[in-house]
Length: 314
Image (tube, rainbow, N blue to C red):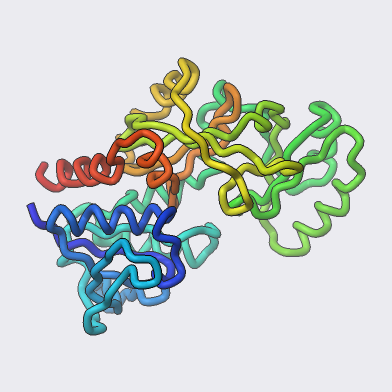
């Protein structure tokens, strides 16, 4: 079936077509005969009961430096589309949250992927709190004394912004570190949000595994190995992707969280696993499918579209 597909994403001109998951999703949609319309989050509009977007018909091609073409700019009614992709990157701020409120008004008659209500209620570092037996010891707090007590208990911790992304602002505080108070002062001077701390998992030196789930089912994984001297394994900051399989523990984690993700309309999800521990469940704008396709030779984008097409057909 040919679908009308709108993609809400960050500016398409700057993306890396060899790594960007949204580009791969758009490319596969086009190959399946679906039509594409592209707009940026600032072009989403609510007006008198209608959800509109100002953007462009989109064609993509795998040519570096010449990877897209736009039709004439137009204002469209998103309720007339079959699928809207919510794919801009975090930060998960009030601008992001507002887009979920607006898009929720057309879902599920128009299928918004991922379901915006649950994207809003399941930010990556908070959904893991529903699975404490799968995660390392975790603290969410703004109070410095609470964070100090957590560090005193566990010795070696990771401290990061609750709503950050891409490895930005992630600090390891080992038992000899003296910077907790200064970091707390820095973070609390920027915003009013709590921080998240987790017990440091030494296995991160072997890699931070990104497992992709499609409609609640694990379809594969890549391992992201930190650069020398780095704690962070995010590819944004120099992490090296490598081929990896799923362990029995990985499958146990996916089996525990998969039914909830499927029930709540989280069709494309990337979870982070370090050693035996689940650290994040990424539902806002997960990445990694191009690397996984190259390593495993499996068309993950096709699996995502098969799940979407099945929901539309149902």
